Length: 78
Image 1 (cartoon, rainbow, N blue to C red):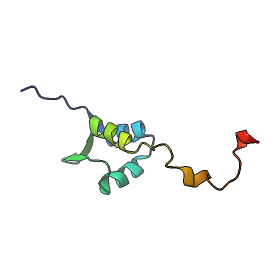
Image 2 (image 1 turned 30 degrees about the horizontal axis):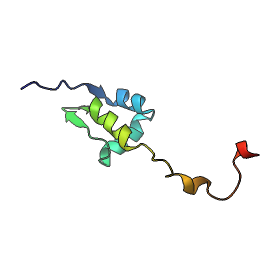
Image 3 (image 1 turned 180 degrees about the vertical axis):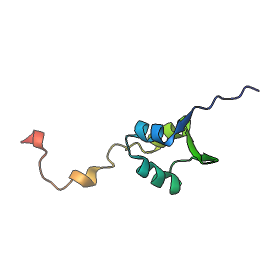
Image 4 (image 1 turned 60 degrees about the horizontal axis):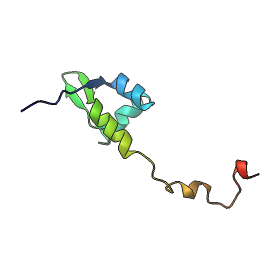
């Protein structure tokens, strides 16, 4: 049985990949939104799980209508 190769990211690498601070990443880890692993004093994240988090966070079409549905015209409609 072939083993899947795991690409590990440091918290700094994962935060950079997500475009967030490491502090925000720690909050996401602590809340269980992003899985992470502690090896001694080192925290690592699987790149595939970080990618899965990104896909899960994708905004579905129509999900933001409440932010602009006040009836005011868009700038490009003026």
